[in-house]
Image (cartoon, rainbow, N blue to C red; front, side, top):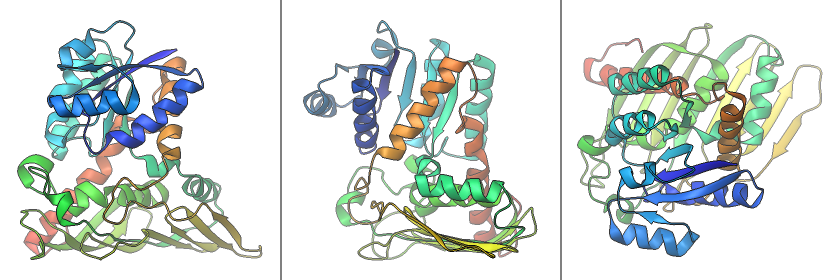
Length: 339
C-alpha cells in the first residue's frame, strides 16, 4: 500500500481528496496527511477528510510510510517543494502548470530525472473516458490524417474566485486564463492532435476584474503534422459553458464536448459516448466528477509499483506551457511565434 501526502490544502484539494478516499477504501493507498501554512486550512482539511494535518512540509515529509506527495500549491512554489520532496526520496504528482514559467518547469523536470523518483503532472482531462476513446481512435488511424484541430473554452469566474489573494496576478500564477484554466483543454488538444510548431495569438485583460493577466485570448495554430486550428479561451463568458474540442481528418471527424464524444468515421455508424457535462466551467471551478482524478492517481500508483514513468509524466507538461508562452509572446510581437 502506497503512502500519500498532500502539500497545499486550498481550492484544488477537493477532487484529489475524493479520489484518494476512493483509493483508500479500495486498499490501494494510505493517506498520511496534508500540509499547509494556514491553520484554518489545516483544520478544515482534518475536519472534512479525517486525515492528519501537518503544520510544515518538513514534518509531512518525515512522516513514516510516505511514498508519494501531491503538490497542489500555487505554481511558483512547485520547484522548491518538488526539490524538497525529491531530496527526501518521495515520488511527486504536481498540479498544473508544472511551474510558473517554462524555464522553471524545465528545471523541475530535470530535478525529477536526476532524482530517479517518479514524477507526474495533473492533467486529468486526459483520463476522461471520452478523451481516452478519442485518443485510441486517432492513434489507430481512425480519423486518417488530421487536417484541422481546434478548441473553445468559454468559461466564467466570478468576483469570489478572484477575491483570493494573488489569484489572477502574474506574480503568483504566472498567467491568466491560458495557464490557469484553459491549460487543461489546450493540453488535451495537443495530447490528441500532436505538437504545435507555430502560433499567432492575441490576448488581453477585460475590465471585469482587477488582475494583470489575460482573461480573453485567441490564437491560430500550425501543427507539426500539417494540420491547422484555432483556440479561443476566456473566463468572461457568463455563466460558463462546456469546453469543446473538434478534430477533422481525412477519414472522419470528432467533437469532444466536456465528457461527450461524437465520432463520425467514413463508412461507419456514428459513435456517441456521453458522460455528460463535466462542469467546472462556471462560478464553482470544482463542480466536476472526480473520476478522472482517481484514474490519474491510480495510473501514478501503477507507475510507482512497476518502476516506470507514468503516462502523465512530468515532462509531458512542458509542450503546453511552451505553447502558452509563445502565444503570449505573439500577442506582444504581432508575429507568429514558435513554442
